Length: 271
Image 1: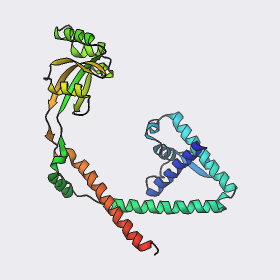
Image 2: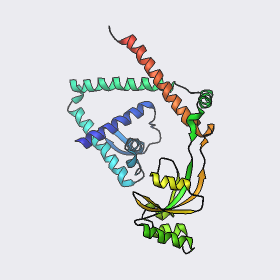
Image 3: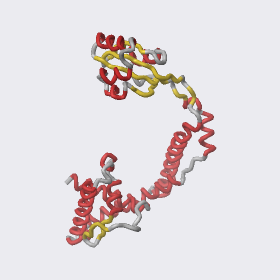
Image 4: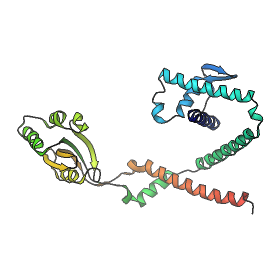
């Protein structure tokens, strides 16, 4: 029953998309006709789009698409069955439809309000200039590591690297117990506060290209090789302009919403 309810919700979301103009009817392949309704490939696409992201990944899988089509067929069959039972003449149906009508009108009115909110390039630039301190990037390091379960093993690996017997990346693939070992121990770029303190302190203190360790942490013993270091710097306008624009738009939409609610409450609330 819950599964059917979830499917009904997805169909309802699809209906809202149709109202918003996101659903196009032209050039559609009819897959099935149920109760006089033509189920098209575009409708299946819209149905899949309403599913959780992890399920949308299977959109091109024929078997998955067939299952989605079956759900739509079941829903339209029940809808037709409901018509045959004259459920659309009941008070319950009328109440649900009235609530749905109000919900759709409210959503469309809010969408129209939010769409009317604009943020200019000048506003974005002014905000950046006035708040540059907010957009400072902290210092980062790009490091690789080898993780072992004992200090003795870590020292042995270090010896083989220093002597030239092993290359760090090859040793990581061979000995590291961290999943990053398969990438030669590469952890990518990280800033302060992203790693455990002992590891972070050693990485930020290490010279580029030098192997340091063993470094003991709660995970075991590490050998660390720093590939690159970047000092703290101010983010450029181009790097953060979309972030600022999104932030300003959300703020302006929130202000517009609050103002409109107060205005409509004054207009429509009976005293």
